[in-house]
Figure 1 (spheres, rainbow, N blue to C red):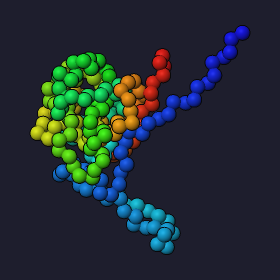
Figure 2: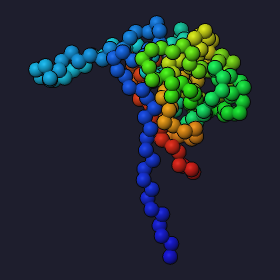
Figure 3: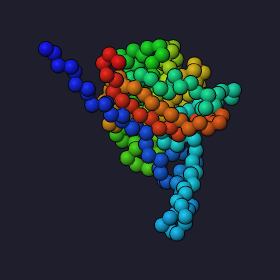
Figure 4: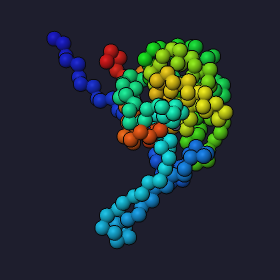
Length: 222
Ligand SMILES: [Zn+2]
């Protein structure tokens, strides 16, 4: 007699988005983040209501093609297929940036959603100060990912690109239809296969949008 397999506990979702709050770190020339209660039950108002003031590239967010391509699509036109589905978390521990040398052993495959975990995850979100020496994808690395026709690429700080390479790196990806997720916190995620759920706000025609991003370890065979 065989015992039926016991239903395993559901695999937990891991929240890899950073909390949005007043005074949090932001890209140097982007607007500061304000989250202010303009009505508050504690002050005698009938309800509590918060006003948000922020750039669309705040915290964990998605870049739309129009961010760097004049005729590019807005964030609301990004295909769900790029934002939802299987993803691979890859840890890169060497070098100031992710280039061909780091990507060759990763062997990026067509259609992959690749999320890069670097030392940024443990380091950069600890402070509200902008850190300019974050790990980034080099323009050479972006060209390699475009050549390999990956679907989506994610990074664990505010830009996929280095401070001096913002335009060429973003363009190398966006011109090839690669979706960019930035501002992930992958500190509690091990390298491996995951189910990705990334939902940027449906901001009409916008160049980006804050997103809630969740990962769940893929069961073998699923
Ligand atoms: Zn961005």
